[in-house]
Length: 382
Image 1: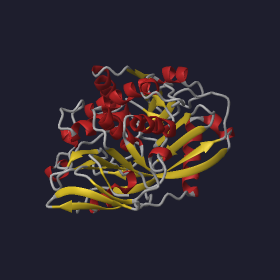
Image 2 (image 1 turned 45 degrees about the horizontal axis):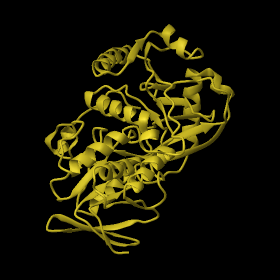
Image 3 (image 1 turned 135 degrees about the vertical axis):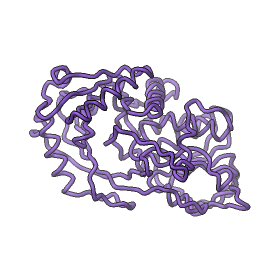
Image 4 (image 1 turned 45 degrees about the vertical axis):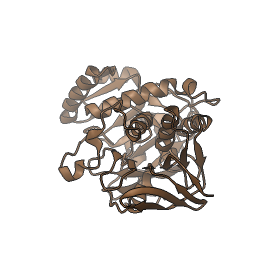
């Protein structure tokens, strides 16, 4: 295979497919997405699948709000025959310290000012939403009904199929082996299925983003870190919202098939590309979640898995072109939040490539912020 493309996107997760969809929707017909395995085989298909607008920085609130609104209409807009399983059961986020409670007050004020209908709750109000919540040691909670959950496989497939209908090409089980750069400009990519001539390459490779950066001579300030999740046997519906705590380091939700999906971050997780599973995670996850949600003591877990968080120094994504290589664009470093920001990523990267004013402000997310010391720290992450 030897072909040409206007844009080559490396990575067939939610980011790669939403970027492709937005490009072809805007009239760029010769778009190629390259995925070394199957669609959603990386971080997208291994995530917790939660969608929230409750953030502590204006930028994240705006990106999440835009994405949520797009997810609400995605099935119809993308003409998808399946079900993306978007369930807006809300997020109940609990605080366990006075400091965190004060931060929640600031968060809700910011969110409300941007049109996000979140609420600050006392513990009795929190128990009205989740009656079996153990409030011992808790201070308060926030809730937004618009937050929720959707199926990452179906959602990514919906964007991929819509992109293909509009003219995009998606190559699965095809690996990029090198990127051709001449005179500081992108000239093409080498793949296991042949070369593609192009002047624009988008790095949307998730956990492998740093390796793709090295192909053009960039040492991106990223590392990939294993994060683990487990799922339980199905039960009758008892938990409508996602329950999350930043200070307790956990999240848990009951998904449409009845199982509970839950995860947490652990210090000492490997900073490489392994996606193995460990018993330490199961023990810590079980101990923390059953204290907060006691009925889960009676539920058996079925399996666990791991995926890669592609971490940036300030735990925020890196978007847009790079100064060092003309035609090379970044959509990387989501630090565990790439799936829920998928629609925002798709529109702003497409606009950036086409030289348009972006729907959402992304200048602050440029790679240069790290050498300029303009990092953006989000207070509300697990």
